[in-house]
Image (cartoon, rainbow, N blue to C red; front, side, top):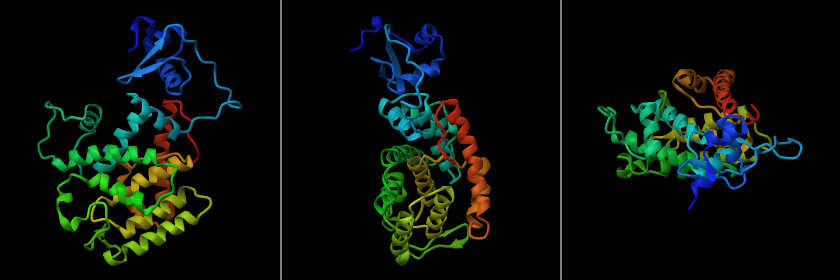
Length: 305
């Protein structure tokens, strides 16, 4: 139990040290304030704690986005980059697939693990709420497993987490967490037939893992091939974008989130990838520009493009 008489709040320390509250939170999250503890998402800092010296980049390695996401998740820090990624990625990825939950409703579910009695849920499917909660867990999964190479188990696990407990999961033919049993289409285009999915997925993963150096274009090539196979009955887009985000974390590439503004460009880019890859590349780079501003706000090293 913390004796609050010997501890100060973030705003009190910020005033004492003559720095911003955000800088104090960052110091605490980075483990640079001796004795600071996080209780219920609120930092309590010893009154005698000393202001950390500015990091010497030659002596201290720069924390990556993945480092900070893991730390903030572990400490359950509110209002940080982990908090924002959970809401932005979940809301936008579900929204472009037809979820009717608003961004505020998504935020409320993440922050309280409940639905608000004051919010309007008319016309919203129960599955939208379940999949939103599940998507938060998917993000935790990719953060925990970011440094592992993409493999079949990981891809199937993401699908299982996303769709578990939905009305789809009650259907035998839907095959939650396993490859599709029935043919499907994407954007009006035929996809890989069910009997060939396993072989094509294994070949795709093998080709991807064999590459020694990967850049954004390699990630998007994998994403395109994954979506063309469309290995699951539903949820392929969200699983595919989760894998993209995970690989950006692993390779320290600036991530991106496909929002409503980029949605149509993203779909067009996938459709034209083989003839004009630059279109999808430019769309995702526009997403990186947006995400870079978020990193700048939280004073996080942006990584590479």
